[in-house]
Length: 148
Image (cartoon, rainbow, N blue to C red; front, side, top):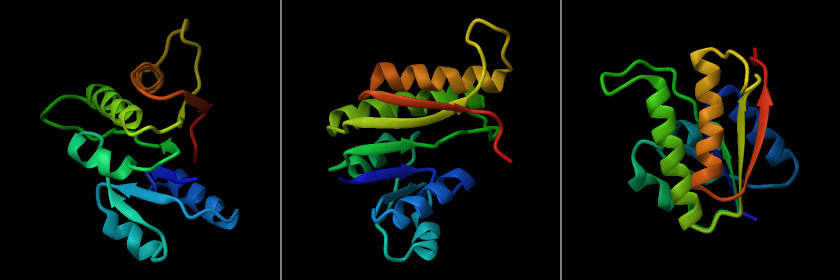
């Protein structure tokens, strides 16, 4: 089984990679800057994947069975806010994963009741999960409180 970990350079992604390796897996790691992943895990396959540049997604997802989606944008940008970028990235990733035959996407979202009042941040996390479920392969969504 080929496992892709997006966001492998982040706090959660890095811990997930360590756990997968400890369990005997050799996951493929994805980042906008794969050189940082090569330095940290020289024995693993590290590839470029930027959810806002769809040309990078198909090669990263080729042959992947399961993909962890740990991408989250809180950076300000001239081309729209983080919510719009999160939605655009989730849609592109879901569509590419479906086209490449990925069997399952695993997504880490945020807690909160969809019927309740949520912050813009949590609304974006929930929307990202909905988009991944609609646009891509079957989705397993975990929801967690803030991770410190």
